[in-house]
Length: 84
Image (cartoon, rainbow, N blue to C red; front, side):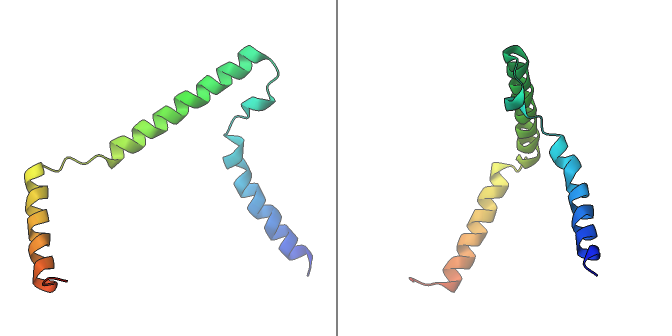
């Protein structure tokens, strides 16, 4: 009976392991040029992730549409709260 929770825990940890294996541990590299190259690779990967996230986040909503939505929202708020 006690072996089942341990087996489930090990199975869960085995599934998590590969995600952590992708991250390169630069601080454990002793040779300075290799360590600096590792840090450069990590910085480039981080910049690529940020650029990808920014590209997904940007939307091409025209300013006229935003102004119209803001005006409609303002009218709704004024009709609800009169001088709160």
